[in-house]
Length: 466
Image 1 (spheres, one colour):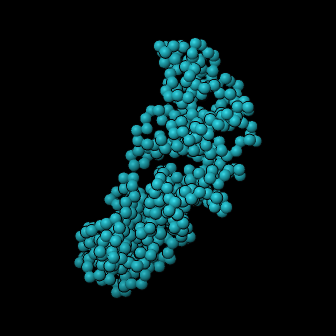
Image 2 (cartoon, rainbow, N blue to C red):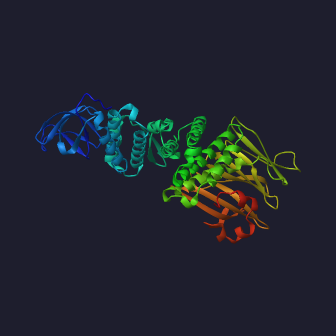
Image 3 (cartoon, helix red, strand yellow):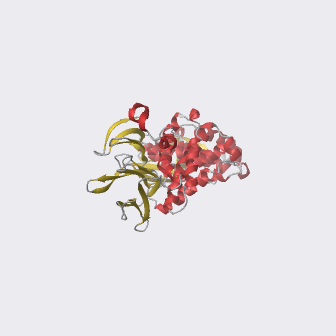
């Protein structure tokens, strides 16, 4: 942390050699980076004699590579001006954080509002995003290490073979708690604190449920009149984040034996509230992902009563935490088929084919992943086939029944999943005998059978036709 008892200087370039003597030919003691804080102990020639407390190294740096730092109250306006400039300068995050720390030290406590904490959070989050990019390089890694001396902390998670770095959000939490913070500052803080890609993948189910509940609370801190003051872009981002978080809450409530309908409906309403005409290009990806999350949990908004048909679907407890699905009919006392799952079984999704030989059922094993179970009558009895949203590890996606094709072995499907970092949507004609997709298209209008036989209830409820 910055202290006022010393003459200080900030490194403003990358990289900077800390030399043993005031000469470019002197041995290099260390390599300094932008934002490093040094104690100034003297000057010689065109060099400054310094001591680096973080590395516990003394030496000399060129005077042009550092800026003296005065922490007197009179210097606060100047430090604030530099901080504002660096806030919007890509690549200068570590330097900007150093000036935020200097301003907080120099300015009187009564004059410090939400702006420096908002700026600190924006800079730290941007630095974390840069560090998470493939090929970020040693310079960015040095910047991340440098800002640690100002109390900025990061967490790292492994996702899809790469490391995701996330700011711990301490400055954003301060902004949310400050009455003087503007609506935009609070919105940015809430969005930063609730990022989906910064949820620890190693959390246990009960820990994840608690974190999702907290994320929902943080997002609702920007509501009412403050929300109405926001520009449409920020309103859209809040709607999208809320949609994704509340869809997860709906799933988790179902798994805990609680009523999920209100949370699922909240997710659907938030997605519907997005003003697509004001959706920024950078938000198109999050819009698609939010829609997939809502699509995966949308059945939770409906009463858990299956449509009347010749086949019936019931559930019963299995092993602790399991739900077992039993397929039956009026002619047999024993279940025709039985399969258990650790996920949520959406009874309201059950759909029976016109010939009574197939039943489709949505089952959600994870918050953002819903599969389609097909109960099929075969010569030897009934079997169960699980159709996943995509041929990949469970992640983000859903597959849903979209209609039966009468007098045939075909059914209509809609799939949407994140594959290789992108959300892909397809509408398919699926063969129940071969369990293979015969035709698929990016829009249902491109498939004749969809125009003829798509299910009216599916069409009115699905988010795949957004």
